[in-house]
Length: 121
Image 1 (cartoon, one colour):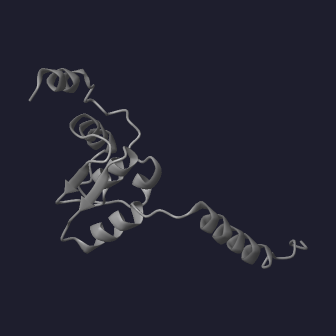
Image 2 (spheres, rainbow, N blue to C red; image 1 turned 180 degrees about the horizontal axis):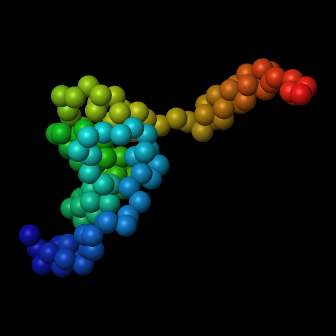
């Protein structure tokens, strides 16, 4: 391990007790033994560079995969837990903004057409 990397690892405040761990897609689904995204993010940032491939052979709910993608890395995850694979896939899925807007408009239209009359009490 080079001296620069050792120094950078020592400079990280590894006490994440006050850190918000349910940011964005990390709050999508509870998963046992999931670890906080800040650990994965710091290590991925220091040990890889943009475009690198990050392999997580026990990906669980996909924390490492999500943080890798956020940092511009490619990510591959494996797990034998089907729920973990499902959660990981959902957390790493991207939806084109136009498609998302159209879907939200359709939901809004459907809900708007079902409005109930005000309570007459």
